Amino acid sequence: MKTVARASFIRESAPKLRAVLDLVRGLPVERAREVLRFTTRGAAAPVSKVLESAVANASHNHSLEAADLKVVEAYADLGPVLKRVRPKARGRAGGIRKPTAHVTIVVGDGRDEESA
Image 1 (spheres, rainbow, N blue to C red):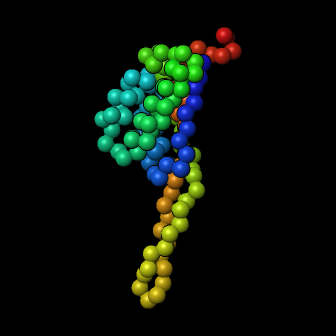
Image 2 (image 1 turned 90 degrees about the vertical axis):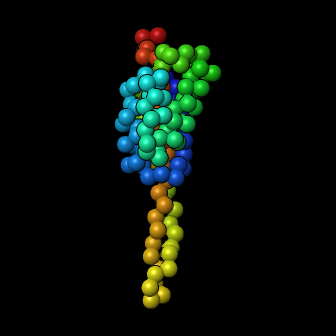
Image 3 (image 1 turned 90 degrees about the horizontal axis):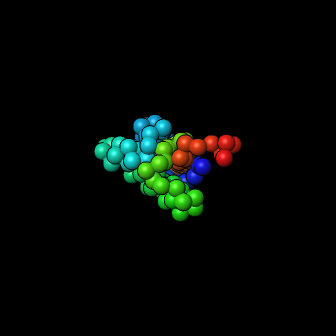
């Protein structure tokens, strides 16, 4: 059984989130929580929230135990870019790009739905 959790419009660039997601992909949930707790990157906080949401969805919707779950899929997609301007010399304007991303984490208990 697989359960999905998504967070949209996270104010972090997708490559920074992907670097953190690569650390937890394929790990059991308890180990993934430990890795995220001790990761010093700023992107670890929103990834941790999405992981906890996926575990809560699995336990509430499908009555799965958190100890049996593992991170099956974890990926970050590009979101819209907020474009701002900053004044520059000689009356010009410099562009500022504020990227966003969408994070998706899928947790499962290791059993395939086809065999069930």
